[in-house]
Image (tube, rainbow, N blue to C red):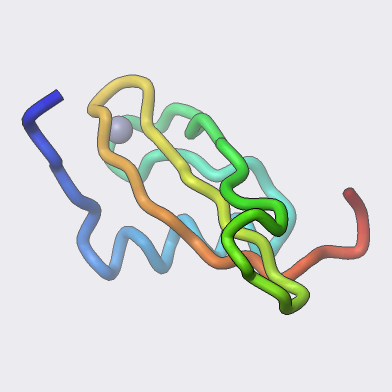
Length: 74
Ligand SMILES: [Zn+2]
């Protein structure tokens, strides 16, 4: 767990586009569905209508954190 590989900004944008579109985000490198972990839920003082999601690729272990606007469905 010492290797912290990161997505490039371009890759992050692509993942984000999937989230915004309501699709299951996939790793641009591995083409596998990313594991989603919700972060927060009020305990970090995020008082606005957003939530954070931590997306992790189960294959290459790259991860990214996104602020996601609260969608229309849960
Ligand atoms: Zn990957």
